[in-house]
Length: 146
Image 1 (cartoon, rainbow, N blue to C red):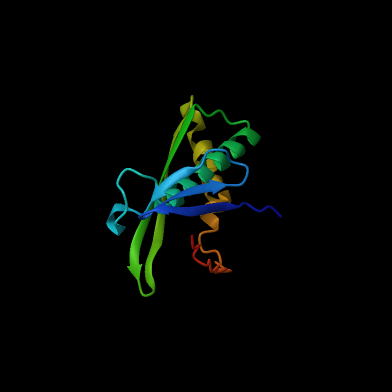
Image 2 (image 1 turned 90 degrees about the vertical axis):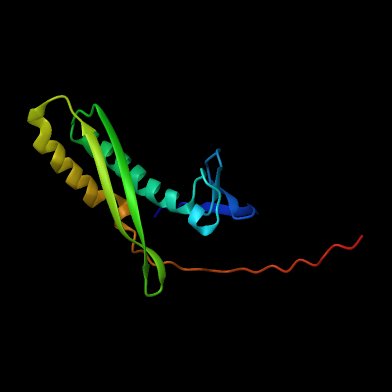
């Protein structure tokens, strides 16, 4: 079993910093503009879509390498549709749009089969209905008197 640890801490306003174990570069983020966040910054919603797109890229490339399939380029956009449902806002749909460049038209059908295989194998996309468990810890800090 593998485990991946990410963390976030509040910095000010509706902003924070995200980090991950074993990753040197932290990422500044904000709430989305529609939730009074700062424009032009990563948001958790962007992380969500980028996680799906990144997983699809690495999954497809791994499948292509194993299949000895030549890829000239691959760009994947993932769009998460956020909607209001009975219990609040939720991503109700994720659309993955891979753009794959190949050298020969004769490989088109095989490329589409490998894309379908990547869709079935992308662990982030397959995990979107995962159980979420919250294990809170609340600390009380006494004010420091001078």
